[in-house]
Amino acid sequence: MSEWIQAFALWCHRRRWAMHAGGADAQSLLALLPIRRTLRSAWLAPSTLVIAAAFALALNPLRRQVLVSAYHLLPFSGSVHVARLIPLTPRGTVPVRFAAVTLWIFLLAGFARLAPRLSSGGWRIGLYGAGLLCEMAAAGSIAWGTSLQLLLGHSWGAVGIQGFALLLFLMAYAWAAWWALRVWWRDLERRCPVCLRLPGLPDVRGKAHSLLIEPLEVESICFYGHGLAVESRWRSRFQPQ
Figure 1 (cartoon, rainbow, N blue to C red):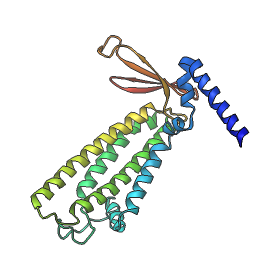
Figure 2 (figure 1 turned 90 degrees about the horizontal axis):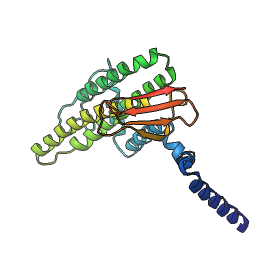
Figure 3 (figure 1 turned 90 degrees about the vertical axis):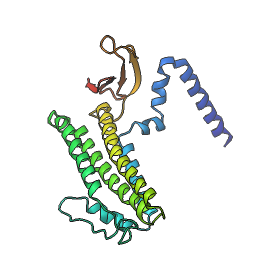
């Protein structure tokens, strides 16, 4: 056991020395660590969505109603009958029309932006983006049903306050869908179209206050040598090698 501890201490010492001696290469060594590789992996976002949705359903005793409400977000699946909004009757049933409009606009806008990427030959990044987009919509449907059960499952005693909270939730839900679409597209533009990983080793060029002459740009590289990701004030793009 003592020999193993000494060997581990020697490995840590050599690694620290390499990090300090490497200078500019220290970030590249850090990028090879398991945590950094996980944060840049293509599986991080899909796995996080699956875990969050499964956790929300596991803690909800009315999970069946949430799944039924999510099913009725699909076209031609019929509408959910809600006899009373506050408190919800039948118990656990939530209205889905607002969520259906929001999520279908979210999906159509996402696929419209994704279509040029598919037609230009980037089928791998296109399929990844389409799958992630559908997974985000499914997670959004679960979030809708769970949140409305919490907001409207019981009467608060103050209908005005409860109605105002519902209005705020509707606005926040629409804004979250728009924000998620922007984050999804920006993340997709930065990813390597071959290995689907996020690039690293950012190199900042230009001036932050300049718009046309020497604008600020951040250039990152794919660790597997597939190309460069360039981010500017106006757009993000990946340049394959």
